[in-house]
Every structure is written in structure tokens, then in C-alpha cells.
Image 1 (spheres, one colour):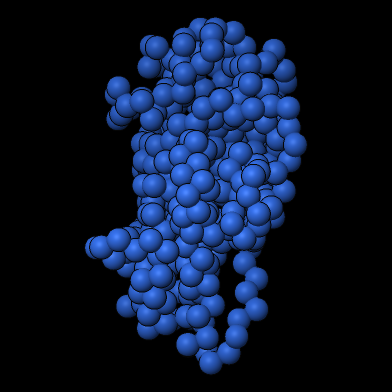
Image 2 (cartoon, rainbow, N blue to C red):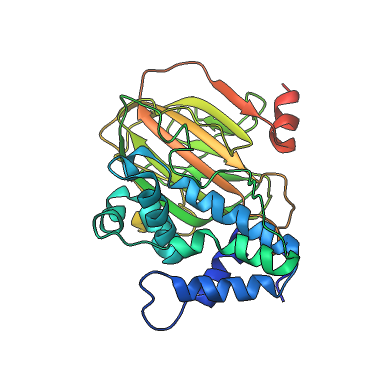
Length: 317
């Protein structure tokens, strides 16, 4: 019986309930999910609803749904979720992978309402669902903000190794050797005399999920869903940034190619930074988003600090 619902448990349940034979509209998947949830605790249904809403909300962006109606966009995003974690992460990294879902009307409408049906079975009542993030189309205001900047490429690794409470972003040398102060923002610092970036993590040793994005200009600022957000400037000579140097050699997903040497602005976002060390199986995964664009040197900027980890380091300054 399910006892708790975090992101890993959510995707594992999707996997466990996926039929072995084709299920074009995900109706059999939805039925299996409903049965599993209705046999468990109410808090698991609520947790599933939160995870589903977050997964759908993350894809609610202009680059995915600009040519779709609200319902079509919602059900196509649900189909991406129904396809499983691997397919979802591939679409999230590369919006072009969403095109077949939109073009071919690949929908999973029934998946959207799984939590409501499970709730009704358990309680006998209709659920006026109110999740932290809305699954409705066009609700992600940051994702639909009009910006002159364009996302060029995205790379992601779900299990970057943390050593001494930090992860490194390195160039061709694959070495980061400076010692950050951390009191500037408690999240991210760049080597003032060389090529390297360090991101402070909540775990001393473990793994974190990292997504890195290259933009052609400043991306829209989106602090929703992140505990801490900060920016620094970095000087870079290498043709790429490698953000998982310590265990993923020659892994293209761990490398963000750059247009050339020069100054770059680096905006780091972190969440789930206070959820245990070492992390247990039921603890939420620690996650980071690193956005990079060419820009002249500027002073560090702290956009948000709400985690105990970030507040603790920032207060020491």
C-alpha cells in the first residue's frame, strides 16, 4: 500500500500502472492509477494531485502551447506525463519533442481527473481540488511571459553527485579549485580569477537533479516554486559548461555548449535544500536550474532566499 507521495513515488506509480500493450488515450493507465490510489490513504491522493499538477504546470509554457486551445494543450501535456518520466524529461529538455503530441492530438484527458475520482471513491464526496500549482492551461504566468530572449538549448541530469556540500560547473579543465565565501547569497558563486562555478547544496554528500539552459538574453525571472534564486557573473574561455564532471565523463546531457568565450551571467535556482541529510527514499529530491546567457560583468543579485540553508549562509555575511 502506498504511504507517501513524492516525485519519485509519483513517477514510479505511473510506471507500475502503465499497461504492457498500447493505451492510446491512457484510459487504462488512468483506471489503474485510480484503483491504486483509492485503495490507499487520502493523503497519498492529495500528494498525487500535487505532483500531477506540478508536472503539468512545468510544461505550461509558451514554447509548447502557443498554437493550441486550452483543453487541447492540457490533454496533450497530460499525454506527456502518461508517457513516463523518461519521455517527460526529454520533452522538458527539448520543446521540439512536444510537437508530435500537439500535431497528432495525442491526449490523456482521463489522467487529469484521476485524483478527483480516487478522492470521490474514498470519501463519497466531490473534491474541490486546490493544488499549489495549477494544471490549467496558461496558468503559468512566467512560462507565458512575453520575452525578447529565446531558449537556445537545455541539458539535464537527474543524479549529479554532491561532494562537500557543492556541485561544480567546470570548463575544459574539468576542475574547479576556488573556495567560495557563500555569504553573498548562500547559493552560487563564480571563480573571480578563473573558470568555474560552485553551487551550494543542502546535502553534504548525495545526488541532486540539475537542469542547465542557454539563452540568447536574460530569461524571464521565474521564482515560483523555487526556494532560492541568485545571479552571478562568470568569465568563460571553454566552449562548454560541464555540470556533472565528477561521474559523467563524455555524457552529452551533462554538457551545455556555449557560443564562444567571454562573460556570462549565471542564474541559479534551488529547491528542497532543507529536506534531510542523508536523504531518505521518501524525501523530496533536491533540484537546481541553472540559466546562462552572454552578458558583461555585473554585481551578484539575490532574487530570493527562503531555505534555511540559504538564509543561514547569507546571514553570516
